[in-house]
Length: 159
Figure (cartoon, rainbow, N blue to C red):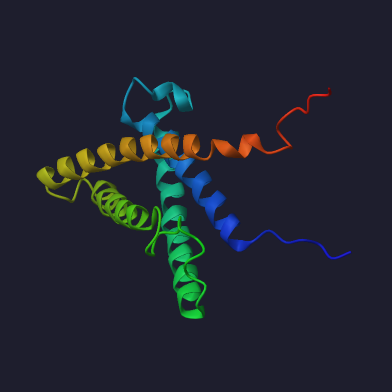
């Protein structure tokens, strides 16, 4: 019997989702006292977690973009609308928000060197888009709730 492998596209999606989830949690813990309980009010842990996961996320987005370009060249590009580039679904949203988050995160990473006004704008942009991404993720989950209607998740009623 041949072992069924997990499609790389599905792996890309769930690793991206996991990284974004970790970034949202650590980022919310950094924002202030209101959410500091998320990582036990340990600001340094939240900061280092956010930076390390952020680097992995940027690298992973690079992998996703390279994979999508490879699919487009191969002629199989229309299948996955969630990837960061392409014509369908979340593609433009993902690419735009990924670039804005990378740019604003880069400004914040080097905050002592960056002029104060740019750091403030970078922080405002990073926080605004982070909360917007959180809203979009909730919307995405609600839109995908149909998976729970599959026979695996529903009880069959006997007559």
